[in-house]
Image (cartoon, rainbow, N blue to C red):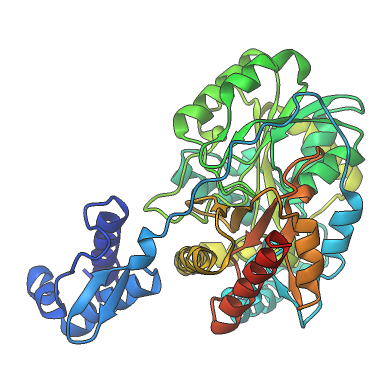
Amino acid sequence: MSKEFLYTEIADGIAGQIRNGILKTGDKLPSVRMLCQEHQVSMNTAKRVFLELESQSLVESKPQSGYFVSQLLSVKLPLPEVSRPSLIANNDEPDELISKVYENMGKKDLTFFSIGIPSGALLPQAKLKKEIVNATRELKDGGTEYEELQGNLKLRRMIAVRSLQWGGNLSENDLITTNGGMNALSFCLMALGKPGDTVAIESPCYPGILQLANGLGLKVLELPTHPTTGIEIEALKKLMPKIDLCLLIPNFNSPLGSCMPDENKKEIVKVLSENNIPLIEDDVYGDLYFGSSRPKCCKSFDKDGNVLYCSSISKTLAPGYRVGWIAPGKYKDKILKLKLLHSTSSISIVNEAVANFLKSGKYEKHLQQLRRTLQFNYQNYVQAIAESFPEGTKTSRPQGGLSLWVEFDQKIRTTELYDLAIKQNISIAPGRMFTFQEQFENCMRLCIGLPWSEDTQTKLRQVGQLAKKIYLK
């Protein structure tokens, strides 16, 4: 067994005991020497185990005393309330607010807690550049030709192989590549809906989905959503006669970070199929799990091709590459016709480069590090919020993804908080962006994809101080 495998295996074992509550906050861990004896490893390997656990904020060292389960894990703020939107389709788009928040994208002097992507500092940029150069050399005519309509064959094969992790069992023929995740969702909504149809979604929901549905003339019906387990299935069942299609982010959705239990996913797939209502599944965050294994998808339980599975690398590897895909099930012909009409081909060089990156094993190594970093960030965000935000603040408890949902006292309006924060070069995402209804005015989403640093901590505390200022008015 390689040293690399040994150190990660031992670290994962201890991490699992901590997360499952077998080892509790404040418990002392075996010494480096004891770990060496117990697992028959070198001192360097044992030290790497503790460094890995420290990087995940699971353990902390105390001089002359050893390693202990971290106090950070004991910080648990109350959960936000289950959302209770009006169960009437609504399209009151917060367009002005969304534009105000996103018009600052790209400004170098801002701290972006508002944009839900990983920082470039967390991405393997140098390795990706090499893959782009290699793809240019390898592709016929340097990648200047169109790809086949269904997309790069090597990329589709690698996506199919990775689907085995979540029980997808896809083949390359089941997949169609797209220009990013939103392009995939757009094709699905255009293929299945027509102006005036009603699409059911989570509430709160990612603003891009709200804008897309509205732009296509669809009515949006927001479903009651639990901050940990996702939509309430009984509410969905009661609303079946009003729904034409359904679009959900079951794994670590933005902004709540909720993850549906497998039994819920299975039941939703069954109920929608029985009512002949297509399910569009957005799984862009599924690879960003904090636990020991990747969660399954709704597509895992799809027996008749009624689930259109969409994903991309925009939240995990390269937002600007615009590489996405669809496993459209029985709707494949409709999606292919739309792709032919709207884009014809994906970008050859980029898709080839991403396919090679996946095939090399570099993607999985990158994901392992990114997941550890995001979990570390989440724990530090919650610690800073507990110390600096107004009393009564509530936060979601994501088990993966890029989002942390914060709920304040009703006195604090986050549109006002945004205006105060932007003057200090801090951008947040007010809760009203994530709904078509008059709700979530006292909430906001924070992106945990920034490198954790003294500056990040200071900026987060500044947001807390500004919130206190509003509260005490």
